[in-house]
Amino acid sequence: MARAMYEYTKTILSKVSFDATLFCKEVQKAVKRLLPHELEELRIFIQSLINQNPELNQCLIYLKA
Image (cartoon, rainbow, N blue to C red; front, top):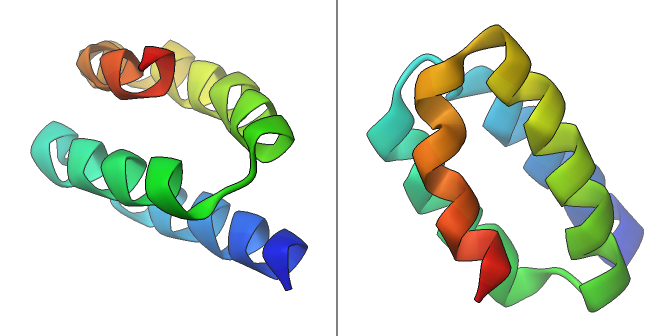
């Protein structure tokens, strides 16, 4: 089930990547729900989204906590 949550999180983050505020809220939710090794994978995924939309960079602070 946890893997399904990771895939769902990636889908949601892709869909809300147009709005940095909404994206940050979804990242905060992901930090609460995902396992530590999944968060590392998510960080890599978010980096690829940041390359396309640099304003999302502000949301990385939630992954460092």
